[in-house]
Image 1 (cartoon, rainbow, N blue to C red):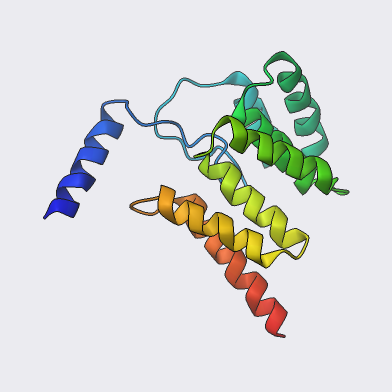
Image 2: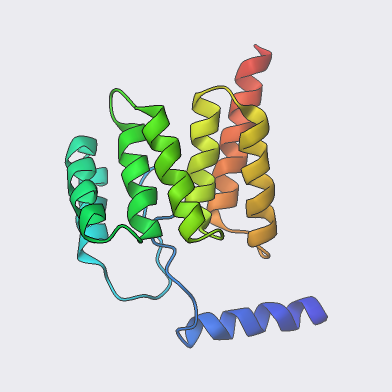
Length: 162
């Protein structure tokens, strides 16, 4: 019964506008899942570029946005995503920006998911699982970022067994 009451309180807070956007969230098309927040034109433009698989365009857009606003965890997260998804990911830069996103917002679920995926790209399963555990703690009732990273870890482990 207590768990139901907590769930209802969280749902009420989200409906009242107390929730934050899942902007810069997980999956293959970041920022598609929003709960409530004013639209950010940079993030909207980046979403369009991601949907078109224009990672270079997204990288340029977000790089400029970071020059104007270096304290945006969302911009750092999506900038790293654009670099990681491009044809020649520069992983040192990817890790730098995901970590900066988490320095600015340690509970940034999208950054935890994407950083976990980046660790899988370089073969560091333990670090990916570390971020999965963090997401498990952050996502009391589950969240898409946790599910996406959990699936990525499972796929990585299944591939390693072959």
